[in-house]
Length: 294
Image (cartoon, rainbow, N blue to C red; front, side, top):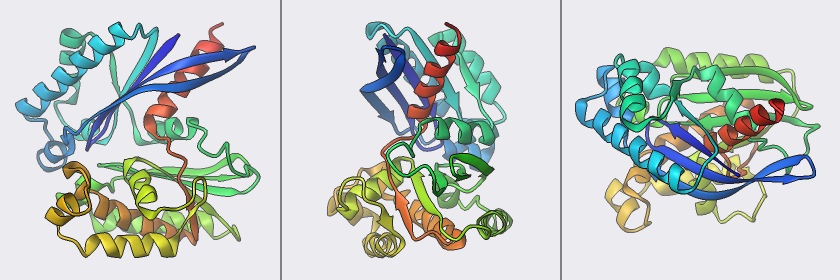
């Protein structure tokens, strides 16, 4: 049995096809195929509040290709979610309708709070001590989702319109940054120690660049040092000298700034990077849905 997860983000569109493993009632999944297409929908959505014909056509073509792959892989269930860029595009509903008609994929545009719940569903904390306090930090192209957990229970969660593409397009506001800082100060001041859990493509890339030992957390100091190192290179040299993909080389700088700001304001000295993200969470929601339906 195979499930598929589609995440239509502001920077890239991803599809994960996963093999579902049922071990005497204990259901888990193994990643089979992950595809990433850097469509940069946020450039249109945040600047013009509208997806251009080219961006919309590219998205429909991508969904059509994903549908074909799901058929070839004999996927039995899927879920497709669109986040910040599609939330802000005034023609988002129109594009969703086109995707259904032309690619036969049901796409849902989800709110930031739902996005945070899906990210948490990835169970990123499974390999660390669940009795402690953790702040989930997911930085996307259009938004940042923060969820604070203490002893396995959700304490507070909020989505902020601060993301990598939004910053590059100068569409982030001082007011939103202030709101995020106040959220962190209000909800973290009661805890003596909080560790971060970072999800998303940028923090995974930063972790690999850090050469940190597997499963060991990344310190604030090391992340700051890595940020300073990357920023010392021009965009061209981050691509040609450091070997970063073109669509990663620019967003990794504002992503670093967001993670560093959140860690500073939340008093977080270390961040775990478990190599999971939105698509992993979507697969888990499919598992939970189908288990409940038995």
